[in-house]
Image (cartoon, rainbow, N blue to C red):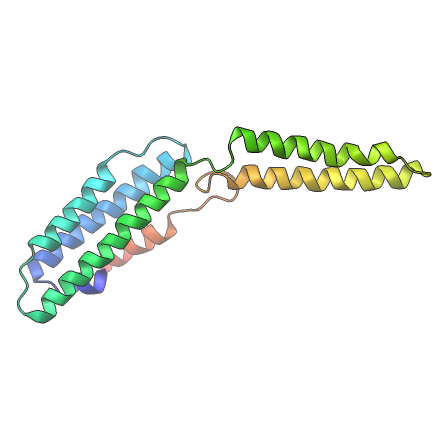
Length: 172
């Protein structure tokens, strides 16, 4: 969107740049910490995107080239809207619901306890095998728990791309 924005008239380009900075700052400083805390994300980000869209729509194009860049900027902005919606959905859509957790835990217990029905001639190798299976299942359950919210936990996603874009807009 940046390249298309630069092709707009100077006043419109500056306005889009200012609104873009404001949007990126809102995402980094307000929304990302809220998503990390699993709190609802309000409307300021959507409002900032609407301001960008309004600035692009209101920009007067001087010829076919600028009209094409304006159209391309609107297409890219549509992608931003879509990606934002996807990000917010993932932040609050807990992919693993209680029923699935129940099935995972009961299934793990059955996998660990079932070999005990068959026993074995030697106790030590049997304990080692069942303990290894139990450990592997525990690690898998832990990984599922950590990955169910991509914005918090040990494997969280950071807003580095937004910071990079903000830095890039600041240099321009």
